[in-house]
Image (cartoon, rainbow, N blue to C red):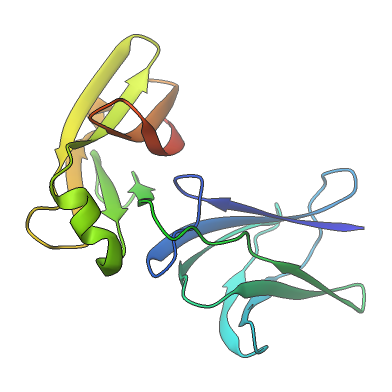
Length: 181
């Protein structure tokens, strides 16, 4: 048996937004299956993209979540497919990059153009925390840009495991990702 697991950054896949999604291919014991790539197909079986899978069974891809999609791969001569999780109509997609720029972390927060008005007047925050230690940054969609980028020094990320969360003014969590420093 092959397991195909998806790990969207932020926890969910948001419809009509560019999403960053991790993928893991493993056997029934959780061990990586030695394949080199998977295909992302749309609902009509058209190829969207090919995704490289490393020796640990892990890969990562960007997906503009418009139509339902699935992953397809060949394992021991058998075609294995799995649908991506259901896309949410409303919400924020989160992407964290703490390796491209030395000593900096890049947080990208995306929303669909259709739902931009819902968040323009709300107070939204990016919260980096570990236990009682935290740093908080404003996320502002009032400029009508559906993608907001926050760049901050890695000193705002604490040694060990950190939660990077997007919360609203009522402290309701919208998205979350764990990051290790």
